[in-house]
Amino acid sequence: MDYQTGKIGRVIVARGFEGEDVYEEIESIAAKEGVRSAAVMLIGGLRSARVVVGPKSPTGPIEPQYTEFDDAREIAGVGTIFRDHDDDSPRLHLHAAIGRGDEVIAGCPRGGAKVFCVLEVVIFEIEGLDASRALDGELALKLLTLAK
Image (cartoon, rainbow, N blue to C red; front, side, top):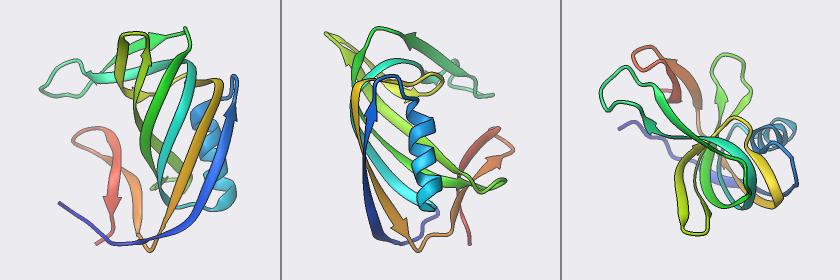
């Protein structure tokens, strides 16, 4: 396991509003504030999302399995922000439990993740890391990469 140590820098608190795109808004804040590495937590509601709920097959190549919803659900999520190795832009990676009634989805909400009513976001900046998301040729995914 590769690792580095850092320390908590700024703490950014944001409120998302109905219909906003979760990824666009969080990545926009990170870009505006110059956040290079961060831990993220969020709670609130999602109106809709396409959620990666695992690979279609447990053996390669990795192809995501999706489920979608468009009926307003509760969300509790955690994630990270690291800069894209190629274009230096901040990239959010988020996993969450998303529920309505007795139905719960756990996974990575992606395409079309829109806020329902309100979303509270806390970004904990991590200083002192040399980290990015770089393409892993074997898995064909942009993964956390720590400089040696």
